[in-house]
Length: 169
Ligand SMILES: Cc1cc2nc3c(=O)[nH]c(=O)nc-3n(C[C@H](O)[C@H](O)[C@H](O)COP(=O)(O)O)c2cc1C
Image (spheres, rainbow, N blue to C red):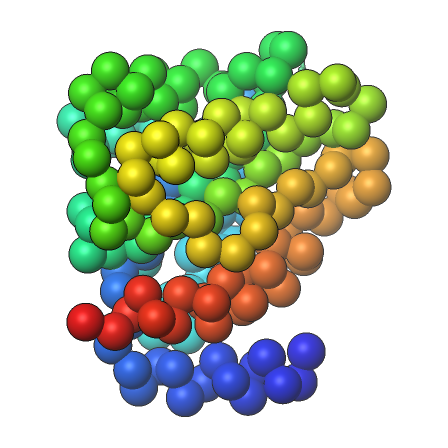
């Protein structure tokens, strides 16, 4: 952890791409995680735009910025309704995004066979669109933690380090 923190600080002097932080939620957990990560990024002077689902109409992720999706799973492996509108639009419009780097944080419950499928669906779609996932898809299990934001914050530090090549022109 100490090493991560030390690495994180000098990066503030490097070119930092804006992070478009998109979330989808039913009961508010994913939104809270996204807001916690937004605060972490603001503290680090990292440019970030928190985008709630209802603001996503017509949004095509700019390829010279980073995309970070935080979504819970609902129903039987479904994306929360409001975010699903954007997902379906992206799938229909199918913009080719070969230079886009993204990350996914999926909230779910491992008692469901469709554990974290909303996050997995986004990962699969973005891969189909030619984008590149940075780091592992983070799965946060409601069976294991009541504080998903804690693990998400640690993951974000690692993700920022992994995006380093993406921040170089
Ligand atoms: C009705 C319902 C359906 C759910 N379906 C799934 C599911 O299919 N897969 C999964 O991994 N988690 C599922 N979950 C668990 C939620 O994704 C998990 O509790 C998550 O933390 C909720 O986050 P949110 O408050 O942002 O919606 C479901 C929860 C509820 C209440």
